[in-house]
Length: 341
Image 1 (cartoon, rainbow, N blue to C red):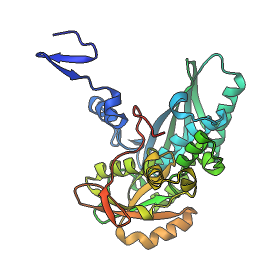
Image 2 (cartoon, one colour; image 1 turned 60 degrees about the vertical axis):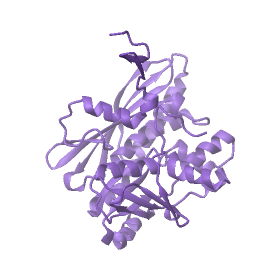
Image 3 (cartoon, one colour; image 1 turned 45 degrees about the vertical axis):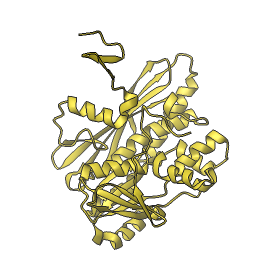
Image 4 (cartoon, rainbow, N blue to C red; image 1 turned 90 degrees about the vertical axis):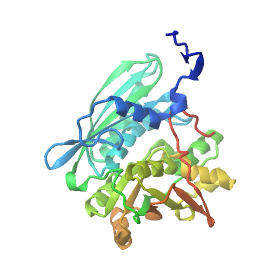
């Protein structure tokens, strides 16, 4: 057989090798899932792995940050440390869990000042304590560029766990908070727009731990995940897990006021709300009889919960915008692919 050099040769025909750039992160995860032999009940494909420990699940999640792809202009070392912990705690929240500890590995160059490392750890420590947990260990290594990896551990009662699967036809689709804030902050930093509140949301994400606990204990949530990579891709993931489709009303999506400040063009605004991500809000479904209960839960959580659509049994996910029905494309942020500029 011919030696491979970027192309596979078979009977004189050339086929391009499948690269990560062609597949994207989500398909790469499915490839990995097809290789590993996981023995946990809930593993790859949800926000956390869940290990059976009696009447509870032990939740474990890990997330990585690299300076080149995760640290926008204007992000301080304190912000970097805060974000590392927050994005991991957001996964614990998405499963309805209570965080118990965070470990962090820091790869950093020998040329970084010691106070830069100290500020990263200050941010990690403050975020962990703000959400009722602590940094319990980790590792430091020399690296040619700043790279960090966090792992959060939590727990949840078995009858309260929130999963990506479980939605039923007719369920209401709901989001917490507002969407587009972090995206507006990103473009504000990039273009010096001065949208300080939005920039703050981007730099210091706020995991919805308290809000998710209210939802988990209510018994009305049928599926849930966090919106880290954009609403459209999150809808796609819930749809894939439930085997159903979703119909979203664009006008009902709660949009941050900064979205219109970041872009005057309505199509760019729409893309920001649907596809950008980094808001770390919760996307969840509830049974259709729970709309009144949802209002009570919103007050209890001190967070707006907005119904933005319904679960259906159609052929594809649909976006309804100004009376027009169109396919809701899966266009959220995905590693190994280029983010919109």
